Length: 202
View 1 (cartoon, rainbow, N blue to C red):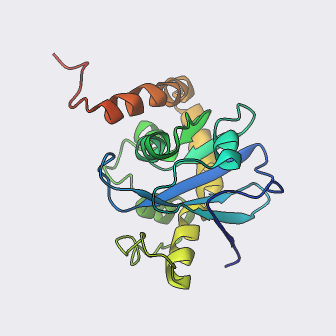
View 2 (view 1 turned 60 degrees about the vertical axis):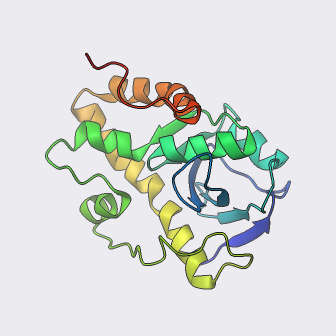
């Protein structure tokens, strides 16, 4: 698998295209405790790039400009977690956004398996390895195996979106998905502020 690794920020020359697949690797899932370590991206042309975030880093101008660019749709799987980490660590409001996990929950109601591994296997017939998921992403130098794992998490998001869009349209739920995607900045802001539970519940 071919990819390019950059330190601290994207180069000026990177072209995200109009639809960019994104994922992040962190030290854990606790926003205020666990730092952001790696951001991996794949554009429509198939180019995969990664940016390693250094300890104490809080700025990445090229990266944050791209993440907030209204002309670039960003595809995540479980966007809520990635967006919160990007907002807290780099101060960027990511938009517009598409989340394959939300789309899956809306159109694959016959299953409770909505993780990326299950989604890729069920819709594309490809088995993803999750062996390196809990490796040390805070290491100063990441291994080839770690980087290949990170790349695999953005490799299929464009294809998943295409299939999920077809199913959402078929089931008349595209408008629901769009509304959920637009609400993501609000729910991630609440996550950062520490709100717990479902505020819409009785």
